[in-house]
Length: 156
Image (tube, one colour):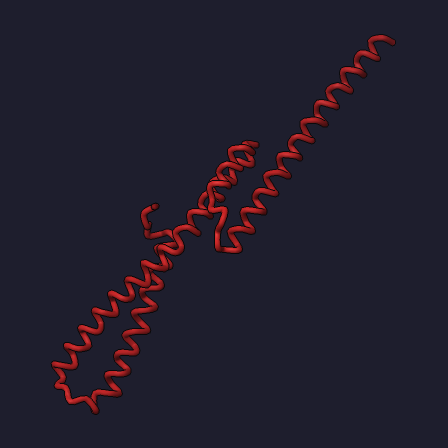
């Protein structure tokens, strides 16, 4: 598994998830403690201790959610990475290598967008391969026609 880099999509989403959960949870705790404090028979020290314990628990839960969302995106990001790294092979006319690289991306992706992208990339690769073959055939035909023309000109 690739390590999480601070500029990667996975890292940004994990951090965003963590911060969102923390802000929502802490806001709820502060609001509930403010609303319920007059009705609780706790001293301020006990209330603060409970809030600290609850906050630590929420940090743990937020970390678990962030890790879960990051792990869930790993396969998606790796599939996109395989596809994007293989695209330059098309401009180099390395169609077989490109198809192999595209096939390394998850074929049974649960993400509709990845499946559509893979299908489109395979279609594009096949189309470029056919066009390249057609251009090569036309070039060879032109070359043969020139040779025939030269031979005909020499004979007359």
